[in-house]
Amino acid sequence: MSENIPQWAKELSEEDWQFIKRLLLASGSLKDVANQYGISYPTVRIRLNRLIDKVRILDSHKAKTPFHQKVQTLAAEGKLDISIARILIKEFEKDKES
Image (cartoon, rainbow, N blue to C red):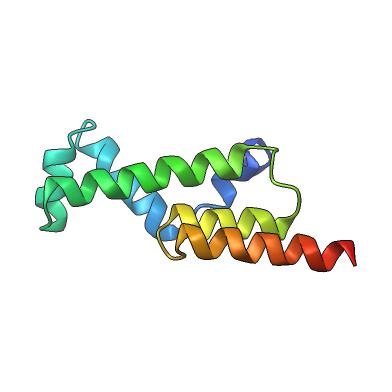
C-alpha cells in the first residue's frame, strides 16, 4: 500500500500530517482548527497557505535539483526568507556553472 503513496505526501512532516488530520476531522473548518490549536483564524489560514505552497513545490517537477526543492520548501514553510532563498539558489547555480 505504501508504494501507492505519492512522493510529495511522503515528504510532508509529522506536523503537516497532524494539521491535515485536524482539518479533516473539523470538516475543513479553519475556525474549529484555530480553536483546537488555541490560535487565531488568520494564523491557521497562514499555516494552510504555507502547506498548500509546500505541496505544490513537492508535487511540481519544476525543481531543478533536490537543493532547489529544499530551498523552495523552506521558503514556503516560512523558515527561510524569500529574498535569501533567491540568493542561495542564484549562488548555487553560479557555483554549479563554474
